[in-house]
Image (cartoon, rainbow over all chains, first blue to last red; front, side):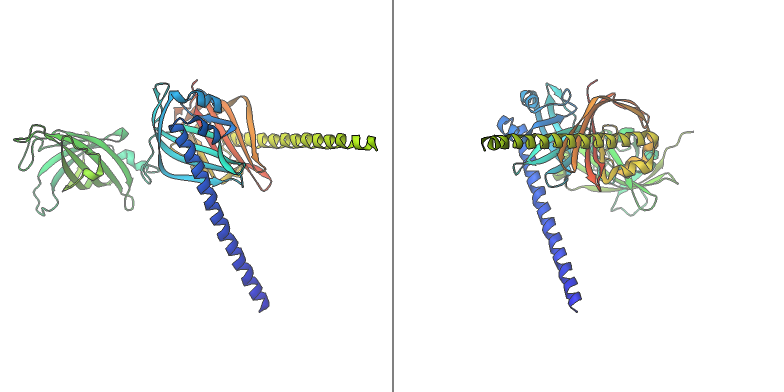
Length: 303
Length: 150
């Protein structure tokens, strides 16, 4: 009985120790993040004193826009040449490497220029932080230019996506309409480089719609149910001015489609949003009162 | 007595000097071990030796390069081994900074030749290896490559 009680006590003590350790780690990670964010801010504000304080004397920075590795003094000397704003994309990861070192990594969108030359827009950033005199400071900073950051679960590992490239002939009808008749027919092209093109039979105008132009936009592919692939895409077009409206408008079509590779058929929904010409069709908040259309179609093959 | 007192600072100086010398010798040994360990993954990659690659990297290893499609885990890298055809020449000597008893930063400039997925690799890069000591052995935890102007 005593042995059981002793074992139970040990387990409780071990669990308590684990909880303490995790709480300690979370605190350390918060300190690392705070120091790193302060340094980013110092750079954006070109605050030389803060930059010096938040980096070690033997700090090095390596980026695609600097001409080779830069010391602290070199970075400070080139501060006026750096016009820079950084937006972190996704989560910041902090890995503790012992008591006095931590690796902080993240993906970022960069905006700006160095010596007048635009800097890479998409980047992976690593910051090696070390603890000196009880304060976290940066020891090493490295930026690698990458391609545009992919949305989670899209593209990667779906080799079938490239076989979706092509043109599809579709029939479109309002989703509320249960009949067989269709409102228009379209040619929908999924191109390489995620280019999406849209041409509709009703572009010259039909009941309830002013004339509009072809649409252009982009698409991406993601896994659907089973072997199926789904395509999400957005195209924009311009609407001719209606009577009494001198400017016309801008249209946005959001496609949510699934594709059957075996039958080379396509099906799903397109949602149409109409905005004034000076509206922002890329702002999600501006998308109101969408009209849904059901789309079915098949791939256009060559003989 | 005066002699004995005069000898004491000398002895202290000798001990201090010896410990600095010893510590530098230890650092040199550690740096040599890190360099030896760091060269091994490159050789394993060029030989496409999966078992050795795995043994020389931590399980949570990440690689970031301009030619990969985003950060790569160990499995991602192993899956793309066949897409690689490359060689690397380190320019000058790598720098190794010891950041604690079990953490080291190794950096170097390198010239790359070859392709990844048929696309040419950047000819001149700066590479960083973050190494950690696990079970008495130095292994790579993180690897990052940045393109430099040729």
